[in-house]
Amino acid sequence: MTTKASEGQVSKEDVADYLASGERTIALAAMRGEHRLITGDVIAESIDHSRSGMEQFYALLVAREGWSSLPPVTKRQVVQAIERDGQGRRFMTAGTARAVVAKEVLDLARQEGTL
Image 1 (spheres, rainbow, N blue to C red):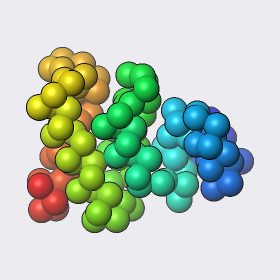
Image 2: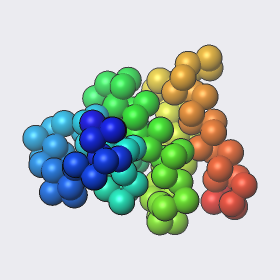
Image 3: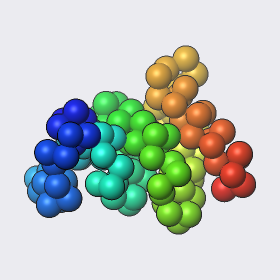
Image 4: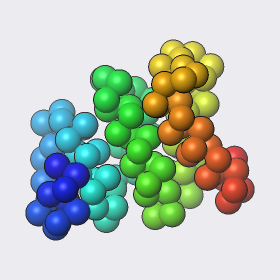
């Protein structure tokens, strides 16, 4: 899906359809391939209330790779979702790929003053 999106084969309507049918991971993969497809609230929701580890991982990747195109409100929501995970569920435990990407997102936020 990431490749199809990067080749322009996925539209915003396709992403909306994936989201409506509960396929957030597929929608996130498309967003990763083409940042113009990013839906900010989906990123934060998929980090905070993921239905699977893969969904959370893709949301973190989209946040990291699309950081410069995210509006400030979405950036704050993403940071807050990552921080909440550290205080509660702890799905982003040290040494996991999710933890590495989450740290990179927080580093981006620090660099630009979002955090």
